[in-house]
Image: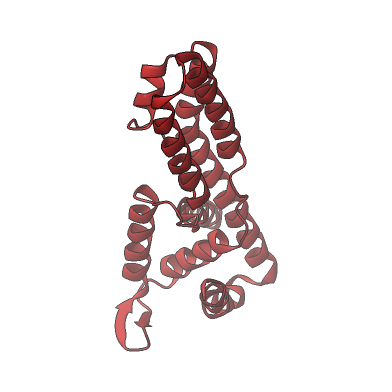
Length: 212
């Protein structure tokens, strides 16, 4: 369904934009917004990840069980997928069971093994695949170039293109900020496609307005 609506939007809005711009400019726009979407996504992911990685590296260098146990209720714990969430829950169950039989040295070793594996899991996050960012860039372009065109949500609810783009962008921003484990949609990639599309259109408009 996700692929279907992406392709439907590409056909519906991209067809208009290609006729308006021509094939060459449309292709440039599509590629720029697609690459821009990926850059924004991985930049956001990097800045979200680095505090946790720094914490883990410090712990690996100077392990402390109290600090380790506090980690699971801190903001450093990043659960970016259902798989990582499952691994964390399984480890906590095993770790709590160790209280009855394990020595502090054994618990330290278990914590070091977990932190090492956890860091590897974060680095092995799935690669983003898809063209949603470019499609959102196309949606933004349609809203900027044809702002008063009426769209019909579910073929029934009328709304102007400019308001539709603003609302959709706001929804993506909210979902990106409040993303939950198992959400496999790269919301910031969508926003990145819109952002790069906005600046590219502004750049093109500025060139058209120059007098020589």
